[in-house]
Image 1: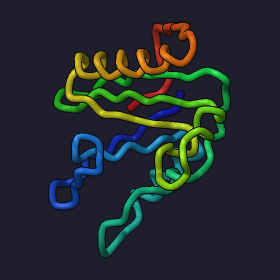
Image 2 (image 1 turned 180 degrees about the vertical axis):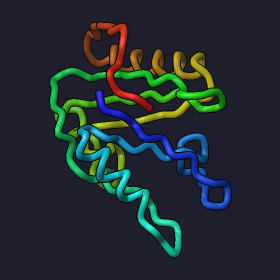
Image 3 (image 1 turned 135 degrees about the vertical axis):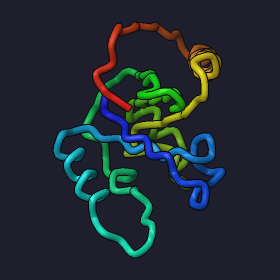
Image 4 (image 1 turned 45 degrees about the vertical axis):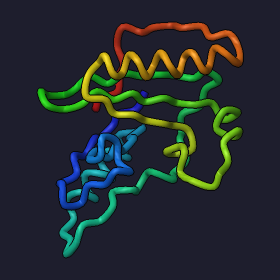
Length: 146
C-alpha cells in the first residue's frame, strides 16, 4: 500500500468536506511522488494552494482485490486512517460526476478512534458481503505510512 501524507488544515481554511472537517489525505505511491510532494510543499506562495497534485493522477497500482489498509496515528492526537483500494471494475460502477475515488482507485476515511474505524469497516464488509462472498486476508504489517 502507498504512503499517505495527512495534512492537518488550519481552522481558517478547514471545511466540512474534509475528513473530520480538517484533514487532507494525499496518496503517494512512489519515492518520486514523495519527492515531488516535498518540493511542492517547500515552494514559496503568496496564498494557500490546494495540495491536489495527485488527486486525479491515475494510480500505478493494480489488483483484482479490494484492499482495506489501516494506518495507525503517527503521534498522539492524530486520527486513524482507513484507505481502501478498489479494483477498476468496482470504480467503473460509480458515476463519474464527482470525485469519488482519489487517483481513480482509492477512498479514504479518517477516524478519531480505532473503535470508530472498526464500526465503519464492519459496515463496509457487510455491504460488500451482501453482493458476493467476501474473503478476508489480514496482513500483520502495512508497508505504507500515514
